[in-house]
Amino acid sequence: MVATTIPVDAFDLVIIGGTGDLSRRKILPGLFRRMCAGQMPDTARVIGASRSDMDKAGFQAFVRKALEEFAGETQCDDGAVDRFLELIDYETLDVFADDGWKRLKKKLRPDVIRSVYFSVGPSLFGEIARKLSAHGVTDDHSRIVVEKPFGHDLETAKELNAELRACFKEEQIYRIDHYLGKETVQNLMAVRFGNALFEPLWNAQHVDHVQITVAETVSVDGRGAYYDKSGAMRDMVQNHIMQLLCLTAMEPPSKYGADAVRDEKLKVIRALEPVAMDEVVRGQYSAGGDIADYLTHSENPKSKTESFIAMKVKIANWRWAGTPFYIRTGKRLRKRMSEIAIVFKDPPHSIFDGDFNRKGNVLVIRLQPDEGMTLRVTIKEPGPGGMRLTEVPLDMTFAEALGDQVAFMPDAYERLIMDVIRGDQTLFMRGDEVEAAWNWVDPIIDAWQSANDTPSEYDANGSGPEDSLMLLHREGRRWREIKS
Ligand code: BG6
Image (cartoon, rainbow, N blue to C red; front, side, top):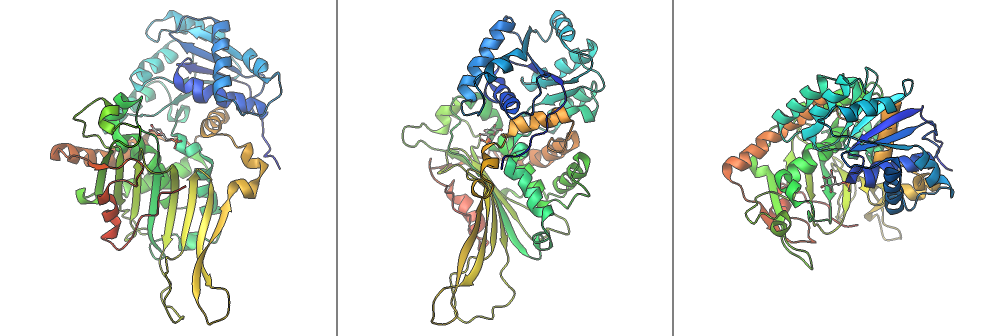
């Protein structure tokens, strides 16, 4: 059974930075897939805008190439690429000059949804916002889409928010965190709030601890200059991992709606306790196989930036007091594996004699790869010879359970762009949420800087630094293995 797709209304989408990497790899192929899925109507138009001096035909050739490279497996009829190219237009635009904006305005239609994707660095956000509104390219109903990094710390995030809010209302600003567009991340809400089974157990009384892991095999090669100023804390924790933490820990919102969900996430961030320095472990990968070490990739031989981080996070509220959330993320680890594991407490009393190697009930929500869920349960070991216990996984891989529906599942970007057109902000970060996240993260980074903290080295293709294992061992717990 293939999922039904409801077409969105007619729209004009301007991609500023239309010839950039994000546009080529994600935005344009994503829109193409939505057209093939019947969701993007042929009344839609996509207008690339960038400094490159090219005409419409030149941009169409650029789009064709992007689709060949990055939309390879899309199921579509033979004429689809040509149909998509008919929806494409282009405008040469120098953000700081006026003439390009005037020409751009003339290209846009008055009666369709108008969205502008800022697919450029954040240093241009303010100027673009001002030019859009000064030239009347956008109006009170238009939407703007901005990408991470949203600020470098609380102060810069506040400045960015102020610049955008000077020209647009919060309801018009769509801040992307692509993790929120991932299927399984949304499934977390479906699992928690669509079943009566889990919610009564989802608290400190029954949950021993939670582990959130986002392990990557990639290095920072090719983006060392950006990454070295950022590190795992700013690149992954402040945004993606905090979103996962919030969705796991939040109270049930009164409904699935933008402000109801975001209010609850914000309450979690505001309830996070400051992190003690001995509860954070930072690491930097060493060389392994043919791949160089972090210092070579970052091109800064003295860099103290972390490519791995593990930490114990405490949420000071009624639901979670006493139940730690352990989070970790890193580059060049053994396997690509992202999951949220809810580790339940043991039953209060065992009625069975004898011992077995109990690991306990664990609910694992696998984000990638192999999206799905596993619940480890205790059962009787089969056969005669008395009551012996063992543990087995109740495993559900979404691809198996849902068949064709998974094959047609949109990736994070295409889903989020369609949400912009539909005007649904549920899966976008609100300004106050971003600021609250920086407010929690900044003191941790400041403390490393004032202590001149040096990250521990860790082996490429391993599980991270030794001290990150100790973070749990010393509390009688252990990380789940990083494996595919
Ligand atoms: C990006 C980070 O936001 O997310 C990258 O900048 C990271 O460093 C990437 O590799 C991970 O995304 P995904 O979807 O591959 O898990």
